Image 1 (tube, one colour):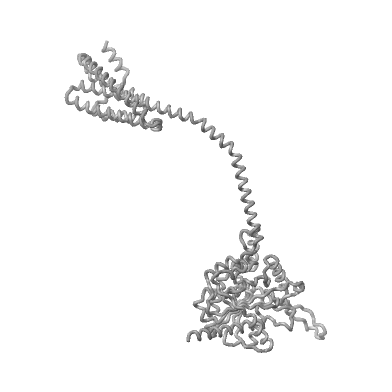
Image 2: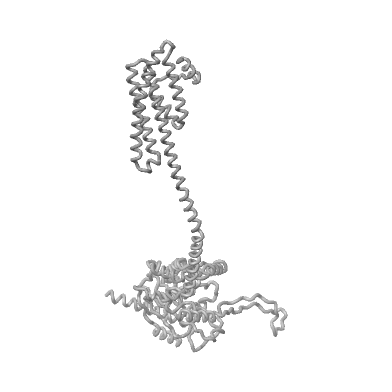
Length: 565
């Protein structure tokens, strides 16, 4: 009957050609297919039966079979007792560990792996011992015992891993209500968060508009006259009395302006579009036999660019004539000349005899600052309009106006200081805001009319026609300056010539001339259609300023000589 049972089991098992060579082969089989626990257990059972049949060999060895069965029963009983003890010991150690380590399954994995390795070690020692002391039948018997032990441990590992995975799923299931509550809380808070977001955006917009309105209304109130309050700046000296004395002498026919200098007139902003800018002054000096030139620079360029061009111009005049150059700048021309002396002081200090700044915004002008100030109402739109006018129509550079703002002038003066050894004169005036100024017209250019084929009146010759002639171009510049001066006085309470305030035109360390006569910003360079014979004109004032500048240079040389001895 035992033969029939064995043959029936063998008939259900596929034939196996696997032979036992080393225990590591069996360990590798279980380790590679450990994730398929049930399949591996079935294969181990089939292979064990195969080895068992191989160990029988023939029906004549039934006594050996019963002997092996008895030995297996004894071994399984002992290993089962050891297994129960190990299981209890593992449970005690597992529950003594932290909850996180137990739930993660790390301990079960390491424990099962250690048991597996210990069984493999026992299997190796057992195999080595019985290979040397027992027969092949006994050896195969021990192999079957160890494989059965590995099957039991593998099943234990599967049950432990499944229990821990089930425990992890239970924890996750318990967390689902918490996740639902968290999601519901977020959905409930979403409208409030949206409301708070829109409130903050509205608040930021209101603050931005308030800041723009405040900056627009404040304007240049804190910037006008900043240079006079800056510590470390040299004080100014009043030279108005001496200027009036020299002006009176000039009107009486006493001209003391020497011919030992080259006089360079530097025009201001937009002078390239006014042909008569400085034209009358140059003609006046040329009649006196003086070497006078008008600097041919691009007045709509930046200050630093014009400073470089003036430096080249001064070098050319100095080396061409062998005479010192006397600089006379009006409006932005005075700023350009001061920038040339500040940046290239080492090259020009021995070539320039003096500098007179007439109505120049040395510290800046509120007109340019109020137009180009960032952060005020419609600042971007205003800048685009100015760029269209200056860059597209006039073909200039927007930096020409930017360099006259308070921020740019503050930055430039902090980096570049005027040389102390060069005499300086600052001239500023106050524009008239009387109603009669609105009717004053200023002659700025001549327009050449085309030739018209019209006969001359009173001429007997039929071929005598009228030729083309020049027509003066006049615009109400004085009226515009009066309106600007009124604006600055009402808004800031500052006296100005229409474009430059009196305090911003004073250069530190210079001799300041403050005439009592009402003169706007354009009067010094353009001829007015209304001339008062009892008042000095602009050419006489220019001569008085240059004469005073020559005197300052002589006085400085005398002081330097006396201090040297």
